Picture 1 (cartoon, rainbow, N blue to C red):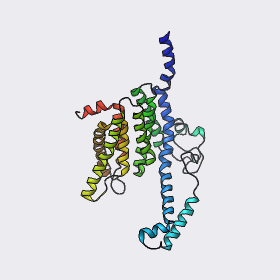
Picture 2 (picture 1 turned 180 degrees about the horizontal axis):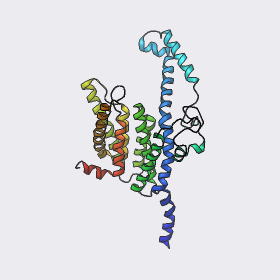
Picture 3 (picture 1 turned 180 degrees about the vertical axis):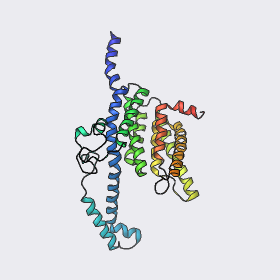
Picture 4 (picture 1 turned 135 degrees about the vertical axis):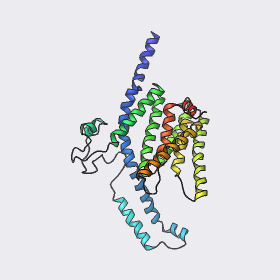
Length: 316
């Protein structure tokens, strides 16, 4: 009877954390990630412009730095910028409600069901018929697939939810970096600290706190060193500080031994994609490809396949 009782007690958790259940959760989370990917960069840009307005209002600071009074045109520009910023409607991940960017139609709840609504609407706005990008359902499907794979790999244990949360943040970061070449601290730093805290509390059985700390340090310093070596030899910046923080976060979750495989995979795949984009004339202004999405791709491979297997690929 004891065995039956234990089996019954474990059954709900096994069902709730099964690949199918977490795939459904992934669809819902993927829908939210679409909002994050679209709005978080806009929220950051608003904050940057607000910071500019605040700086232009600091006449004493201008005098300390430049040794003279702030020119009247700069003061006027600061006031105009502050006024413009104050006139903007509130913007957050929750407000305003989602609307069609073409006609302003407010998306109703039954038009916002992950994947189902996109299929029912045949990929078009119900009001104006404007096509809804494939990227929205694809991100929902990718998140669902990632959650299901993590559930299959990790098993029905609460720790799988931590890995799902980390995977969701990584997907959002990959798309934001691809779109804007920005890796927001609002995502990279919580991801880094979450990995360290999870290791400290023993929620990552395969990783001790010392290994997590070493992974974060090695991840950050590896790209930091490459950045400065490239800058000192060429006078140019080859990557941003967001890449350092991202690789540190991956190291905190996966350990220091994962850093080399991640960087190798990211470098090879990134170079291949860059060459294809160059050959097809699709490189953006400045002729560069963001490195973050490829670091994330390498990190997800290690996360899903397992570090021992990946290390075996490179003969370690």
